[in-house]
Length: 345
Image 1 (tube, rainbow, N blue to C red):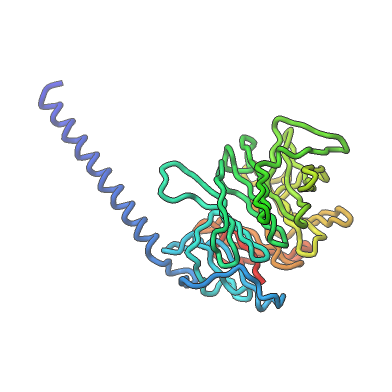
Image 2 (image 1 turned 135 degrees about the vertical axis):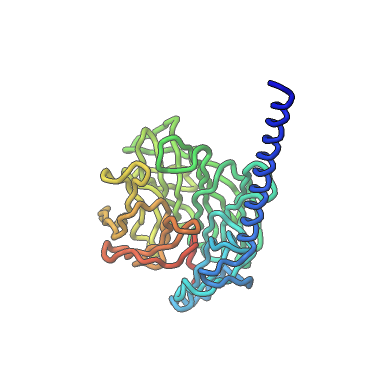
């Protein structure tokens, strides 16, 4: 190659790299502007006081929903509060950012990404009723599920240790339980004794996820091993879990403690969207398929004893939908650009 040819190649390389740099700067600038500018086609969002304390009245008119705001703007990813009777109304933003969130009885659990770090790092933050941090704990994976016991004492979370989806088979999870009275952390449910078919069971491939509390001593969760998933009932003090039923994932206990909502793999579904939402009556172990026929990859929340709310993919990350828990009716969009709700009332 002649010197002239080399100069031409060098010139073209510089021009190309310059164009890439200008394009990246423009993309970053536009993305930053989008993040700083309030999205116009969603409900208004304004900073204010968000509380996890209920009124004690128990009336649906007094209830509020607190969830992760997915609208583009300066309050994206912040916990916001809306009236449960007007879920698409104005949102009050808290300045607390969470990837996953849940709350009960004035205790909140916020799974968040640590800002300003080159590598992805996460932590679990226990919040009081005024969203003030009580304690935080490092997470060794990507946040995916969070729950609080009805009394507010016990909290649980699940992370992906490897992989980032329940749809495939190449993933590993870790579920932890924390006592907020003693600050005792049980790092992994894999340390519990598994009772399967009345016998002690051990497996190198055991995974747990999706804890839902019955009370401070007992919970339900998903156990996976040998290519199958199981509903298990756990005992915190005894540190045992007992299998109850196959093909149950991400259980969620109803407020009256009689039913579990869960996602179930169905043979007619596609490999990347394999679940349908069901409700299991714990009194007679009868399953009821719900009127949502799309694949729901979420741990549903009970709005009350008759209605479930869950997240599905939306234009800005996810939307919240509702469905009757008795198998009747059809899905209704509750609100757009929202994730990880908790009912405060």
